[in-house]
Image (tube, rainbow, N blue to C red; front, top):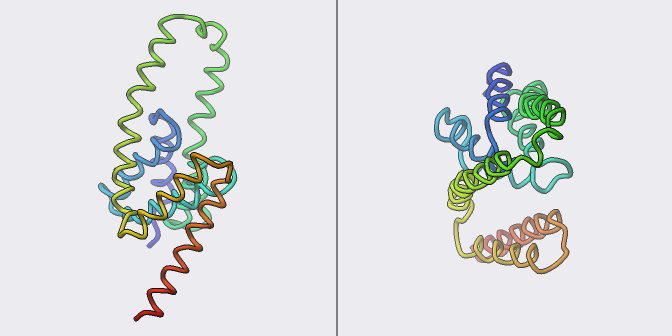
Length: 181
C-alpha cells in the first residue's frame, strides 16, 4: 500500500520539530501516529523497524525513518521520512549553536533542561511498555530478552551481535518447534 510521500515528510518533520528526548521519543510518536491513529502499521512492524534500526550503524531514528518510509512509499518515501525527521533538528541546532554561548551558564536554561529531561522519561517509558507487550509472545521471548539485557549490561558485546544472537536463537527455536510437530 503506497502512502503520500508529502504526508510522510510532513509527519516526520513534525516529529523532528516537536519531539524532545531523541530517537525513542520519536518512536513513541510513531507508535501513536502510525499504529494507533492511522493504522498504517501494527506494533510488531514498529518493533521490527526499531529492532533493525537500532542494530544498524548510524542514528537509530534515521534508520527507523528510512525503514518506515520505504515500507510506506518505496525509495522516495524513505527519503521523505529521513529528510523530514532530520531537517528540523538541523535547523534548530544551527540556531542553538549560535546562541549557546549566551545561555549555557544561565540558571534558568539549566532548570528548563532539567524539566525537559524529566518530562521526556514517561513518554519513552510509555512507548517501551507498548513495544514490550507487542514483542513478548511467550517464555522463549522473555528468555532471549533476559539474555540480551544481561549481555548489554554486563559485557562489552556489541548490540549488533546481541540482535544477531537473538535472530539465531529464534531460528533454532522455530526449527526445534517444527521438528517436534
